[in-house]
Amino acid sequence: MKTLIKNGTVVNSTGTAQADVLIDGEAIAAVLAPGSTLLGFDVESNVDTVIDAAGKYVIPGGIDAHTHMEMPFGGTQASDTFETGTRAAAWGGTTSIVDFVVQYAGENVLDQFHLWHEKARGNCAIDYGFHQILSDVQDSSLTAMDELVAEGVSSFKLFMAYKGVFLSDDGQIVKAMQKASQNGSMIMMHAENGSVIDLLVQQAIAAGNTSPYYHGLTRPWQAEEEATHRAIMLANLTGAPLYVVHVSAKQAVDQIALARDKGQNVFGETCPQYLYLSLEDNLGAPGFEGAKWVCSTPLRSKAEGHQHHMWQSLRTNDIQMVSTDHCPFCMKGQKDMGIGDFSKIPNGIGGVEHRMDLLYQGVVDGNISLERWVEVTSTTPARMFGMYGRKGVIQPGADGDVVIYDPNGHTSIGLPVDDDGVQTGRSHHMNMDYSAYEGYEIDGHVDTVLSRGKVIIDNNQYLGAKGDGKYVKRGLSQYLI
Ligand code: URP
Ligand code: ZN
Ligand code: ZN
Image: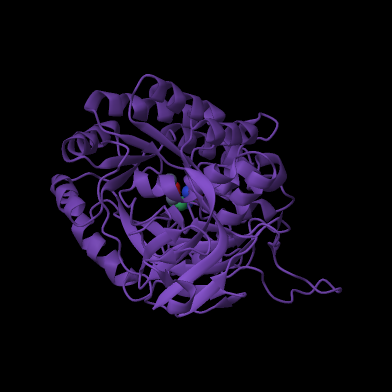
């Protein structure tokens, strides 16, 4: 099967050009000057399918390097399965995810890795890889880290919060970091001071402050800054590379920037929720509504300038990339477990479908350039997590993961209602009974999505099938070489 995408504007992180893209089978075969011939052959008359991308951007498929499909968490399970979540991702122009294998204390890391393979295999719409969560860092977990690197899992997430669930103490963190510094893998950190948070939560509940707003107030930026600094120091001690996940506080960004300026291999990821949503507007919504936006790290105060700082950091490369931390829960039957006690609200926001659009709006609004959009949503995730060359770039030899994005199109996010206020459908495909970005209007549209050469989204239709997505055996981070 040969496909020619003609007349488009190809956008890579390195630049933009008018070019035609020839895909042969699952891979990009050539990037050609518009209308050019190949060895004397007219390309267009020698392919099976021609897609006219005139007036549109042709970009490498998005890579969401932080998702939690069907994750057991907070007394329930994330509402998107690998099937529903990856299909929703495809709708939004994301063609690869890296999901987290969960290991709770006492569980065997390799058993969990095999279990996650069983969950994902044959169910995904797009390609997928895995990071491994380590909680109690047993001796067997340390040997498993070597085996997992050989299996294509080259990154390990640790938690400085969630005592009794995920939290690793500093000694355990150092042990995992020592191993990472030996085998070249990346340590990912959930950087919040869990003991401080647990105390503040207890005090808030005891004082009768039980609404979702207090989720934000009991996870203050100081707890994020302190943990980020501590993680950086432990990484410095051990020589391990460090990737701080879901950074939301401007003070945490500053810690990362300082370490980077000193030459340390420290990286930061933020998420669309920290670029668009806030403590005041969302967590502070009336009644129990704020539960929709309970996630950790929490949404920060707009008045304190975190959002503005986050966009700026993306522009200046103090923060390197944007993932969603997609961990959806429905309001009914899941988030509502926390009515009367915000600490029982499952932590997580769904957004895998909207990341490419929300970040494109950042281009329209003048916050980032077109090329930087591609860089933070596709190229850097590919390089950070050992997939670059195959993923993250439009070039010969790369997988045919391509998105045709219409800058003159439009995307309305939310749940459409009729004149009587009755819900008439939904404008997302994630398995959620609400949208975290309800009412957002995007000045752009994902028109066509190809995954390894196969058109899976076109003309507002899903043309793929479950099982199209294959496991991606990742290499080591290409930022460390
Ligand atoms: O609230 C969040 N972020 N839920 C998912 C788990 C995590 O910490 O990434
Ligand atoms: Zn986390
Ligand atoms: Zn997460």
